[in-house]
Image (cartoon, rainbow, N blue to C red):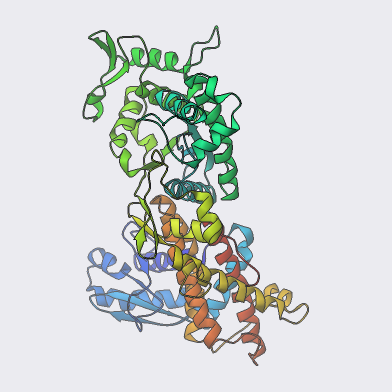
Length: 545
């Protein structure tokens, strides 16, 4: 078990002792770090929960609970104190910190891994930028977020499939082709077309572009753009299990109908289709949407929404328990729409999740760069990587909550000093690695083999242990809340705790053999934890800097 889980179990068992063996109330029992120094290492409200059933004042119950808990913890507890209306503050002994550190080491690669009550098959669809231009900074946020979320879900015990949905059908592709043809002919791009150097490059790259149809050129141009998107994302450490083509939803393979036709059949079975003005409609207002949606126009052509329905139905047919769509701020209306699709198909709408990511602004010299793909005026992901690197780009894209706007300061992200948070965190890992390099031969193995009977630990030692122990809980919270920024915050806080440890708790110069061995073990545990957190963010863990 996790050392904190062990401590919680001891509190629950001590509470049970006061109830003559009856289980203690677990639902609201808390075991938390006190917000103020001097109130113990951990504090519990167990006595206040027990007081009504025991018919005694909470502070009296806390005194009795403290005695029982001290018996159970033995040498692991230094003392317990009653505070306020009946909180029990627990001050843990050095022996507990030593044992907890080795508990982390014994967990090995499983440290931070979760075991969900029900493991799910989760489809995470993200980026899905239209193949009408190169990857932009906005897409960089979606890529980092979706990839980090997928990594967190896997660490938490779920089976994850990463998916990119290519909108390679419809009028936008024809407009791209018309834009390429116009430039190949030396003409102005159509008013609703795409501008920018990349379109001119496509016009040069595609043979006979001046003489081909807009549809042909659009298909070939989008294919070339898709190839470039894959390469850019791979350089960004983002790879997908599936690249799903929207066009495949319209394709029938006799005797099998197209996925859109299959979805229509399922909706008819559910009784949610109706015809009006020659068009086919889906009654989504019954499931929280603001209006019913057209699936098939009076011309017989399916709508974009029909593809959305077929795509979700296809995900359910592939056996996913959860479908997560990572969408941008301009898609807020899709939350109700996508959940309505699930309900219309006869599925639980809670199987559909739609995190909405806010905008990204690239700031340089105090000014924000303009971001318009169609106008050809935007910052590409490739340019960001060239300017500040993959690590800094991913860190800054993940350092704020997805529902907050990001202002990515190029100058700050380029700095090679502690003011830059990603540099600060990576430098902590490099320092930890330097400790390992400077140990005597075999010293690390000896320190990890068995807990040293260390005593005289200082505040920096204890705080670093507590920060390391918080990691599994942070992963669990970040995963449940779909909030990778919590991992970035945790990595920074762990690095700050290590900096205090580096300053106040010398490892290589520690004369006491047991304390030196403990600090070596703690350095290894910290290094593993920090590396794991950085891996979740897709950020590298350098050995030296």
